[in-house]
Length: 268
Image (tube, rainbow, N blue to C red; front, side, top):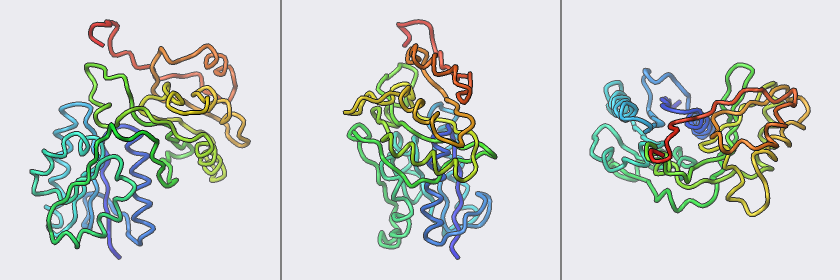
């Protein structure tokens, strides 16, 4: 049986997506092993929020070949999207996979033999991604709590932040798909769901139909068996009066992780 190992840097969204990539390999018969173990394939899901994260990405990508020189090393995630040209210079990396292609990583690895040992890069223009990319339900689990991704991308282009170049424009997940995954997680026994995204408060702004984060929360609170719903990071100016009213609901946890990077408009 072939073995695959994973290392994830960065946010909950990255961690959530790694679980989906794991599922791709599991469905092809791979055994998932710890990252410091001998494996046939190593996947590093990168982050690029800070220069320290960039350095750690490169360090983690250099490790696999020291364990198995014949392994296939895959770099994906935000740093792979924004710095794919730098990664192409690293002899330790075999495949560079951008955000849009994450759902095909297992296929790309399986096809690696067709490249005759040549390193390949599969990175598209992130600003051309107009719709939310659905990935296989896998879910990020943490004891009795599960994370549910409902949104990707950001259009704010704050001067201190690189994320729009790594994730592209804001894109919202279909409401039906969100409810379907939430119900599945509840049926699996999870009592608490945490909503995650790159810019949660922008949910629905890109959809043709009228649907907001408030609507998503309201629908999720109606799901039988769900005991607690929690919101992850959110911009303070996207919290509406309606959302504040919804927070009176006993299922919605009265806690918000509010990002206040600067109180100076000129800096932002």
